[in-house]
Image 1 (cartoon, rainbow, N blue to C red):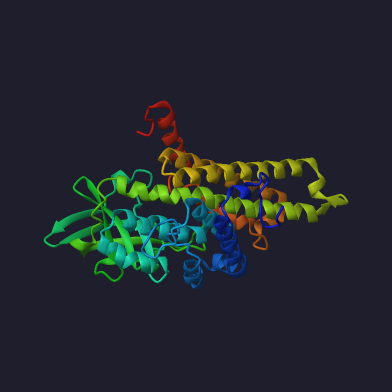
Image 2: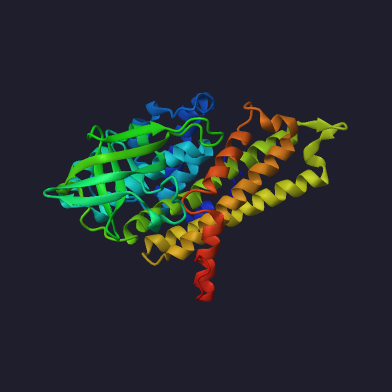
Length: 387
């Protein structure tokens, strides 16, 4: 088995040559350029912005979108990219997810031709950064209750409201902001520097510290009618974007899980207690076996989901299942790895505690574990237990 991989079921053989090359390229980038700086960024609560253009050069942003300067890769290739980014840090994958699967996808799927031509090539190249303003201080799992309002005023729209927990918010050149026009939810492109629009970083996080998380404030923000996403009306617009991001998370969480497992395996092989490596004890082996089993199951789940997505037959509920299962498994693996490392599991000499804390956020955002449980419950029973 390759020292940097976990491929117990030879899943690599199910990938195309282009998909294998894509994965190897992003893995090399993470090992060479991200890992040397990520612990420092985590400690300082900052994102390694110098890496953005290099991520763009690899085709990460909008990787599975066609045209407008996007790479046009398979969805499996895109998933593999997200897995390698999150093997470095969830903040790196979050940046890629929000840029490509939320902000760029919203414009690609729902925008006008003029909006696509203006923004997508710049965003694919990393010259423009986007964010996605849906979540509000009092409305997370129920976006239909949003309080941000939009009203038409001649040839413009006036926006008022607050968005919270917005990745890339303070560095975004364009914010995709969702607001209610009466009872209809619409999407708007709000550009940096628009009067009345501000973004403030949220500090003091114990999780996703190497990620920019912001609050967006809109006070009588006037945007031209040309900045309305013309194809989006109702919750179907933002939900379609969320499904794109959740798909990437189902892959990404496996990267964090893999890093934690490999760290625990190597540590157990080297750490000696009672005159032999702790890897030789039954309880440690039980944990390691559980970890590699869950990673393998998650890989097969993500691969199959990717092939369904490439065939345009993927259902949103299938995304919920993969996001729910793989993130929960990854968090479980991170906690087991921390246990195997003992006291060393809580220091930044090893990446385990950083991944464990990050995954506490990943299991909550883009649909909590419980919400995805209820989505699946509704799908298999035909009865809605959400309301």
